[in-house]
Image 1 (tube, one colour):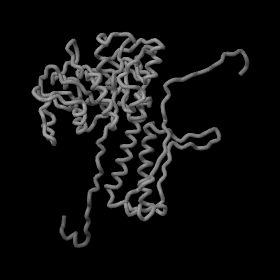
Image 2 (image 1 turned 90 degrees about the vertical axis):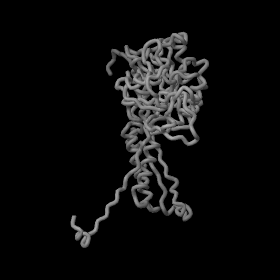
Image 3 (image 1 turned 30 degrees about the horizontal axis):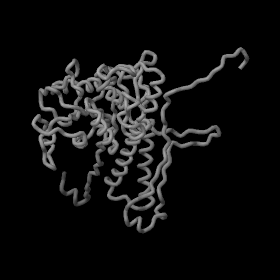
Image 4 (image 1 turned 135 degrees about the horizontal axis):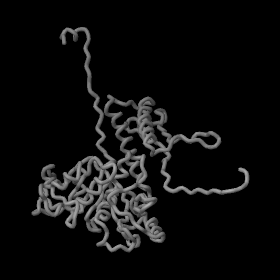
Length: 385
């Protein structure tokens, strides 16, 4: 390039790089004990693309000596389509670490150390991006309760086993981010007779199946699961499960399908997942708007740019099926799927503008929901119609 060009025209180009969206709403984190016999060092939190990667570390996935995490991972990778990756956090004995440990210190797991608590393990797992749904495998009841309580404080969800609606793991109605599943094959099956695939893998199977779809595209009911055994239940017991918001697997027309799909508090699991996705998507869009531009002025034009990002996020939510499309009543009046509202610059005080904080940006969106049950009434007649 000739230096003389600068004498006639100068061109300076800067790169406005957007922030990366590191949140994931698609992958499982299996939380359980380390393998009984380790063949190699097991990371405190690892990501695996196949069952073979886990068995090479010492996790046993089949047979009488199978490890809970090994069984859960086998069930996960048995689903169709299979997950691309599965995260595993082990409740391993760990070397005592300083208050501000390095990544290498956190990943050490040796027999001589002190066992990590559930909260310590999950707090450590937060440093690894890419997972959304926690599935405990092989933990004590008190530890599962701790997982449920921890999950409620995060933008995560948790699937756990609850085999007794009369004495549930946690009281129904309390937790919006955790969903219970019934793992027994019959209501009176002894605990020791429950298949390990069900006990360790029922929640994993449902999460792997449902999270294959983009948030908003799925419901967690009516999902066909592989490698786990369905239950044969009487109507009276099913009523108990439904009252406790416990999802179960049963055979319908020769297919093993889930029934339920609610969290402990009674909200639909897919609604919680879609809400988390929408919140993250809108945040990332607005932050990118503020970051990649030299400034967004506190004017009607600048406020309109923020409104555009809200609208873009809601439009994507509609595209993925979480938000209802514009629909019309019998008179042809439109019922939009979403609306936004932002203030006019003239409506804001000088104090608000000088703070450089934009408030009162709002939206309302109609959930698309899902159909789980259909009731049809008909009449056969000899009369003319």
